[in-house]
Image 1 (cartoon, rainbow, N blue to C red):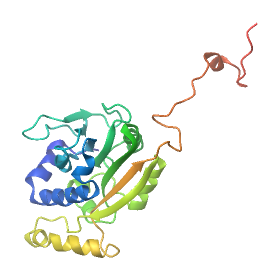
Image 2 (tube, rainbow, N blue to C red; image 1 turned 30 degrees about the vertical axis):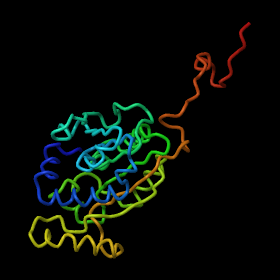
Image 3 (spheres, one colour; image 1 turned 90 degrees about the horizontal axis):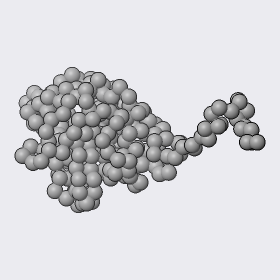
Length: 251
């Protein structure tokens, strides 16, 4: 079940822990996709990905914030023309193959239809397109705490996520874990957060980051017939034919 948009807005824009999390995740997003590499491209975010997309407003051809209907929508970005839109999980108002870069945060793990959602991600991405999946790490502390939005929905391990992506014709390319600090607003943890982040990146086998970020590219053509592929159009007479499937020649 998706969280309410006001809960997400308050966490990322009005909560000290949320602002710190936003800074860490957005910094890594920009490391994956620097602004100048997305110049002239179309960038979309699904779930509540808008806190990460502001750096792309200036140079990208178009930026879209897709917010699921059960979550609700808010105008974004503040002080600029609105680019956010309310949509269903599996029916986005985007033509097939029109997105170059796609970010999912608080979308996949809270969706009631994750398989269909991944199919929709595949549909809207163009050939060579990439998606960034940001999800709670099953082994991390953030997935076990109700104090943050990452404590809701289904957490994933990296192997689980990558297996799901491959099943839907995505090719995992890069991954990183972030948010090694405990999900607490206590002064000690907030002040030492940069130290925890550096230590976690240095010894990931010992410490589990609270959130994992996986970049995957669209496999094209897909290995399985799915959305966006041509299906064989049946001859109307074949539908009415006996089980053998052969249609008698007209006399």
